[in-house]
Image (cartoon, rainbow, N blue to C red; front, side, top):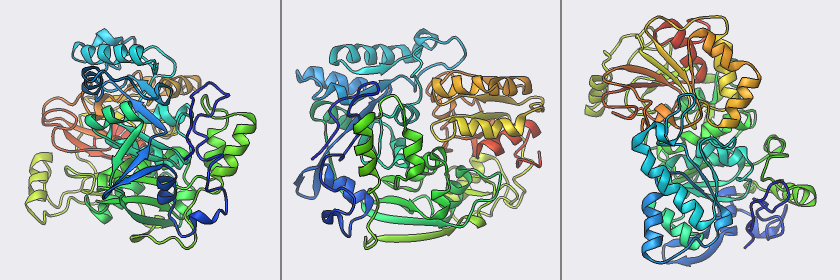
Length: 487
């Protein structure tokens, strides 16, 4: 089994997974295999009954799900098996107001201190507050080149599936599994079944991968992917930017899938070229040669297949309390079909049959690991430029990483948002999970570019409507749910 053994700045083997191992382009051992199964099998250490023990190439850590795992290691007298394969950041329980520090939010301070202590004890690399590499863990991983095609990546966060956009297997794990990876650099897992979702045709101008994701989830239902690893394929997927693919893969867990993945192509290779931890020189060439062969075989058999037409996608917004409860912005709130939908309507405070466009909003949040990359901010800024946030609406932009924030500022996007009346924050998870001071208070209504709209997700009683950056920006300007171009 081949796996990266170092994470260095510009010269190392970081993520050149399989570059010297079995399975080069055209190699017969992979005939008939899906992309997911191929990567899984490359990392298989041994089979243990109905489960497999997998090597983990990269372990991403943040302060929220690690404290108990660190204590577990100490109690057992263990140290991290491969410190160089662990990358830490601080993102979940932090303030994001400009000038913030670890002390800015007292609730999060013990978690951050425990995280920092373990980083020192084990020798992990960390992107701490104030570091130019800091940001949301799922943004920082690929942004730095620490996550590369063909890798297995684990993180104590369910949206680790985001990393499938690079052509990696991203696995969200719990705290006990975080401890297992720290101690052994392996994971014991049951192999999921395989599903291919082929999306052809073309998204209409002005639509975002978020609209595509909400359309997909509304089509297959909240449990449509349970038990599956999903491969996204088709011309519409290939046409997405890497950032768009991250949005799509990020939402995989929202319809129950174990993870999502897109075969790496030239778009991914060019996006990764020159990134901090990406291989260089001869190692880069060898890695690219391997990545070029990372795809499902023409004769690969999937356990389930689904086809969608991207030309049927329109601007979407959620009306209820799961991402599956989503409709076109031009649509009407549906009549409830069961008790779950009746409860969702009661919680969200809408009436069946009313148009969803025009529903007043209190807060607009543009951020999260779903839609806080530079491309997302550009889309929102294009809608906002030269206009003003509606009176009484709190609108905020929280970049996904410090690098995204700096790049946006270099383009003047921060001024576009500030001049319109948006708050411009520092990087972090922020209002997506409401673990820090950024939250929706009371029964207020929020249009959010995040990934979840469950009851109380953004704060006790929060009423959340999921949407794309463009729809969120248009809603901030209109003071109600609105579609870009119609605000």
